Length: 282
Image (tube, rainbow, N blue to C red; front, side, top):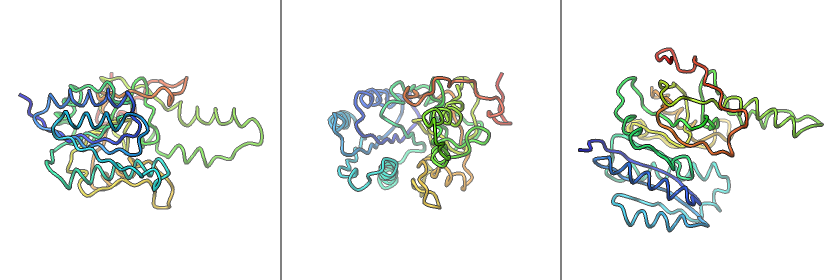
């Protein structure tokens, strides 16, 4: 008999076939749960996303679709728009019932077309080490440096760093390629699925499993204290850590890395020191 319960949240725009595949994975996961609910925000779609979401909601209990058409006009920046949609979903979660002890936040446009239900259930059951949130391990290598903050791996906003670099007068294309290689692709490590948890300050890679209580009262933001644009996950996780939360990448929670975000030379093994002092890897 299933015994675990879960809130499942997502945002999507023009999700295409990846959305349908991701929703199929969500439905299979829900069959393994005692109780669950799904909340998805969407806006201004120009493909079949509205129909796909409508069919999913009509055929499943406990599904809320939040349609926010017109958001593209009021939030022309993509990061601001995603941040707003995530806040709408998070607000709806706490404003309405039921509220389950754990919350799974998913990207629905590709990374979770092969979501492994047993991996999610296993992560939910883990007791040691204590965790407040665990994040996905994209295969074949970790692409999401925008959301990642991990000392010794990526402890900066790579895109702010790239935009702040002084451009040379000549050979700019080669300079940019070398810069992307050094700051992004050389840090897109491969993480074995049987590796121990990896402590981080922030991560995502398409999937985050949270203790619901750790999200209560928090909001996403896309601007840092100085007004600089920052990944919304980074600022949410900063708030969590200020309250004592412990965050990890869970290597067993695999997602799919979009090929367009991977460098040709990426995929080197994750350095062993990044697994943390409390874990070990053979």
